[in-house]
Every structure is written in C-alpha cells, then in structure tokens.
Length: 442
View 1 (cartoon, rainbow, N blue to C red):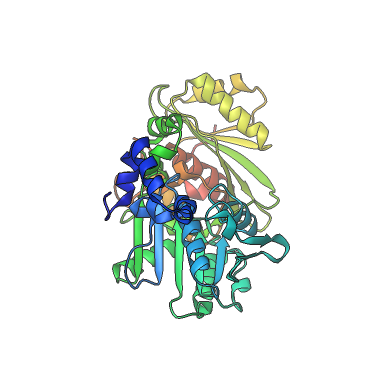
View 2: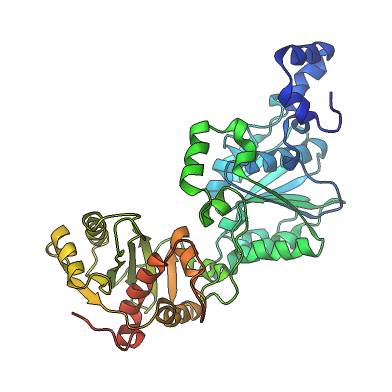
C-alpha cells in the first residue's frame, strides 16, 4: 500500500487486494473504513496543510466541490463537540437543498451512526456529540452580524448576490463573528467567476493569507457519466465558458476593456421590474456558416433604467432560422419593436424578418462607426448604474468583456455579434439618435 497517497492504491487495486485489506481489519475498522474520507478523496479534495484561515476551492462543475466542503465540515463537527459552524449559500433554499440534503450534502456523508439531526424550522444541524451548524443566506448580510462561529463552509460564493455589495458584506460579517475556538477557519467552494469577493480572496492568496485549490471537471471523470463528459467537451472545449465552468479557470479582465466582469456582476439582478417598453435587437450574420446572429432582448423601466432580459442569439443559422428566432423572441417578450442592423443585408433583412412574422414592427439601423465606438456610450450607462442584467448571460458577457477601447476585439469568436445586438437595443431604449448621430432609419 502506498502510504503517502492511499488514493492511488485504492483506485488501482483489484477486488482480491481489497478483499485482503478488509479481512485484515477488525470489525470496528471494517465498519469505519468506508467513511474515512482521506482514504477515498483525491488529494485536491483534502484540506491543505498549513496555518491558513481561508481555504478557497475553485474548480469546474462536477469536480466534487460540494463533497469536499461537506466532508470538511463533517470532520470538524465529529472531532470538536464545541464546533459552531456557519453554512452559507446564495440563499436558504440552496443551503438546505445542496449543502444539507443534496447528494453530496452533510446528511449524505459520514458514518450513519454519527449523522447529524436536521431541524429545518431552526435552520440547524446537531451532531450526536453536540456540535452544531446553522444555515444562512448570503443575500441577508445582517443575519450574520450577531452570531459567533468557530468554522464556516461557504458554497458557490461566486453566485452570491453582488447587488448592494451583499456578497462582500456577508463575508465581512462572517469574518467578524468567526471568533470561537482556538483555530477558526473557513472553506469556500465555488466555480470561478471574476466577482469582487473572488478577486479579493485571490489577492489574499497572493499575499499568502488564503490557501487555494484549483481543479477541473475532468479530474472527477471516474464518478461522472461518460456521455456527460463527451457532451461537455464537444460543446464547450476551448471556449471561455468551458475554460471557466469546466476547467475551473478564473478568466481575468483584459486591459482596456469597456466592460469588466466585476462591473457586470454589480449590475446583476434576479428579475426585472415592470417595464414600459421592450425591444429585440438583432445583429444579422453575413452568411449562414459564419458568425452568430446576435439577438438580445432589453426593456426600459419607469425609473429610466434598462434591463437586459434575454440572449436569444443563434449560431450558424440561415436567414429563415434566425428570422424565426427573432420573431419568437419578439412574441415571447411582447416586444414593441425589432431593431436590426442592416449594413450586411440592407432591405433584405426587413424582407427576411417580414417573411418570418408579417406583423413584426421593424426598425432598420445602419452603422457608420465601428462596433467599439458604438459601444462606448452604452458602456458609460453601465458605469453610471443605469443598466441591469436580469440573469446571467455568459456568452454575451464574454463578448462585452472583449471590446477594447481603441483596439481590436479580443473576445470569443470572430465578431462580437451578441454584444453588438445589445448595443443597438440599449441605444434604441436610452440614447436615441445621440448614440449614433449618423444612424439612418428606414
């Protein structure tokens, strides 16, 4: 047996070797062996050595982050009857359904005879030895202001609500209450995103204050369906979304970009308010086999703020298909106007859209400036806090973050088609003719 790395031995052992091991153990050892996480975990799922206060596990989906956090919290509770653990997720529903009751949650790990009892009404788990854990929502920073804890497990911190700085406020309140016991510690598990809290922890890592473990989805391939892995590779391999969500790579901002990921996170909202006007903006492709057809839905609220509602863009679509997608988006969102760039197709764009839906209210616009120049006043609206994203639109946001002041586009794909559609839509809603002085409407 390889004493330094038991995982390698166990993963490669044949049934006879495993049977021999089990027969060599006494009854108590045999009963405990299946629940000894350190013998079954990959090295990247085990807490690193050292005097760290925060351990950030930043890895792709399916890596086993939840199992990692649950096993760590369970081990803390089992060895310390005085442990008081904070369990924090983006909201209380996720704290319960993922961290506690999920397939890899706290009720699914550890020996059954040491399983904690769960009192949903009190948001509390209690282990047989007296250790306790309480559930919290990161969307309610004030709920963490008073309680004291000895440990904390924070799940999917990149998903925590960034509006009104709730995510960082929750983290700060947690830190200020982490004062029980002799060695208070936090484990944060997450898929990477360039949000303010993540960037703050990365800066702490660079100063030697935060331990960081990185990993990809494919490290856990033995526990994931082969068809899932194949589909993920075929669909996302090499893309920015794949690098982030599968490879666990933190995609940094490009110097000089009009939009930063932190800025986009600050404008995030769970749902849009009542809107007075909705438009569908379209950046048609030059050919069916080339760029995507950018289709973005946005609306205007009574207070003058704009809200991005959907990215309905389609890839490698012929005129009939993308026109149907536009008509479908207009109907689904009850849009009062379709704004379409006509530089590539001219009047043909109107004809194609009319063929898909005769009653579509169409406005053709013609660009006389480059994409980046058109985008600059729209980016200024984001900086002023006048635009919100009602949800997360990874492909669109990757393109926005690839538009560089005074430079060439550096985002995914050959052209920022989704971003260009967004610019046309928000210009129509908020800037009018000022956004493009030489726009000609036909």
